[in-house]
Amino acid sequence: MLLDQIKAIIDEHFIYEGELTEETKLVDDLGADSFDIPVLINVFEDTFKIKIETEDVLNLKTIGDLIKLIQDKI
Image (cartoon, rainbow, N blue to C red; front, side, top):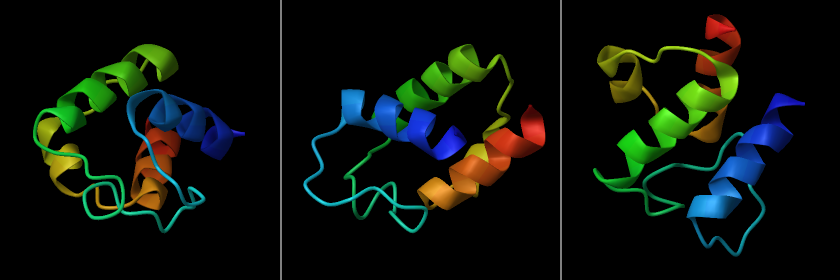
């Protein structure tokens, strides 16, 4: 399942005490910053063999947004 794969990747890069859900906010809940986001994007691109455009990244707010983006690309 895509959510489980994304959770596993996020777990490798962030320490998060709560449960990761589609509503989890990348910046507010995970504390992702301008250095973390490009790293995550590269990992997702490599893992799912997709290309994520800069304008797509600007619209990513939650894990749900990320799931939808990846689903649209694969």
